[in-house]
Length: 104
Image (cartoon, rainbow, N blue to C red; front, side, top):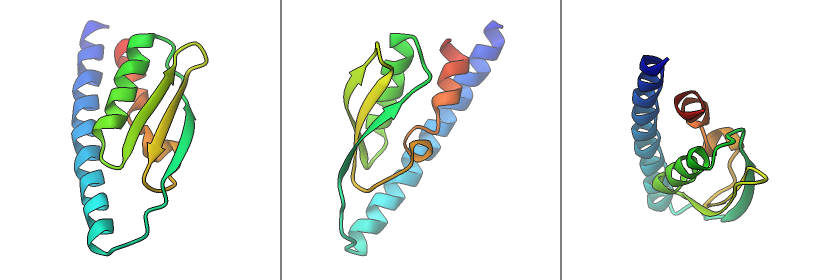
């Protein structure tokens, strides 16, 4: 079980790096092409139950360019996220399954 958590931790880290690079390219491309920015604030529900898991997810969202975690409601499992353009839940938190398998 311990080795499984380590493997998911490595996968999470690699996926986070990939998402940071992908988002950086997307934000840079939008800036260069002078596309209109349509900022939105979204309530994202999470399946993570532990506060430490939710905090790691919220911090991961903030590390990704173009998104920022504004508020974390641990009891209701909701993260309020500001994004520079409308996005789906899967685009905002693609690493949630890895955090779940790593910490819960």
